[in-house]
Image 1 (cartoon, rainbow, N blue to C red):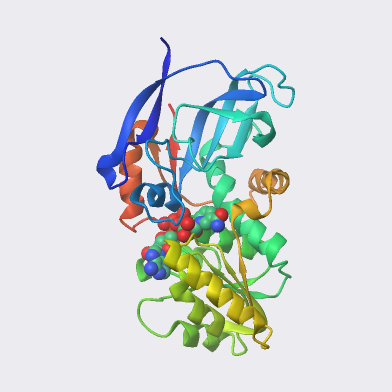
Image 2: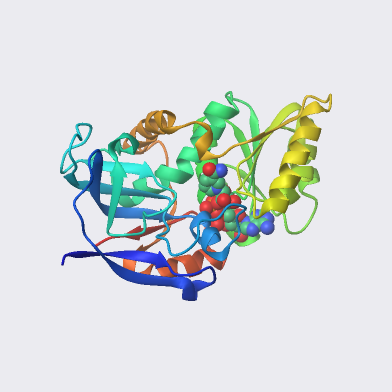
Length: 328
Ligand SMILES: NC(=O)c1ccc[n+]([C@@H]2O[C@H](COP(=O)([O-])OP(=O)(O)OC[C@H]3O[C@@H](n4cnc5c(N)ncnc54)[C@H](OP(=O)(O)O)[C@@H]3O)[C@@H](O)[C@H]2O)c1
């Protein structure tokens, strides 16, 4: 029997719950493509769903992996959108940390062959989130200001990169050792661990910023709102760590949005905009990468079989940018 390798979360828990298992290779079903994965980014949710840090959780065993870039290897009956040999991507939420993935043709989007699949990997989830929040949710305009909470991480650096491209003045919270990364994207780093975050922002922006993007929990909502100008918006895209955090977010959202100071909280999740918007935004992002107008920060690459080491590094909090798994 032919098999392929997949990372598998065997039970809820720590790194001991991460196994590398062989699975039987099957033919794709009607309407489905079988794809050989080339690269897959590692993101905070890959870790959180194993640990149990999310309100709604799939039961193990499962294959983690939110996104991939790969090559179509076989297609099922009725597949006309993609052909064998096409380089494609998709947002999957699960299953991408494997040598092979099966996906319905409608979810797949083309990836230009000339792009380096390692450098393109952060675009599929992290840059997509930043692009959608800046341009589809917040509708930013050149000359505006943005505070990025969690700026040194995978999504945070994507925000800084795209904010720079959009002509925004950006401020980013990060621990001091990661300040050079924030400054490297032309943003002003802010040490959120020591000192007053709101005062630090208002020293530069006395009236407050136009936009706050919060990838962290609801504990940053108060500071985020205080850093906003009247009429500004806070987009909360960080996945809540549990039902309690979700309830706090919803409560603050409702209370803020009915308060007559014009400040608004908007929740963002990738489910919000849908697959048609993903395809449009990936096309834009791949073009920007091809023209070297964006600079994704790849913090390191790991062969798929060493996914556990990549998760450990992300969990250690030492990563700036995005880790990428590669399939030899
Ligand atoms: N809504 C969506 O569709 C969507 C999609 C992707 C990701 N997300 C969410 O986005 C968030 C970030 O994901 P990511 O993959 O970019 O994570 P990441 O790469 O691990 O980056 C997070 C960064 O935040 C900082 N941080 C950690 N704990 C913090 C705290 N308590 N307070 C302030 N900053 C802290 C750390 O940097 P420093 O060491 O510099 O502090 C870390 O590098 C996660 O909550 C994830 O669930 C949401």
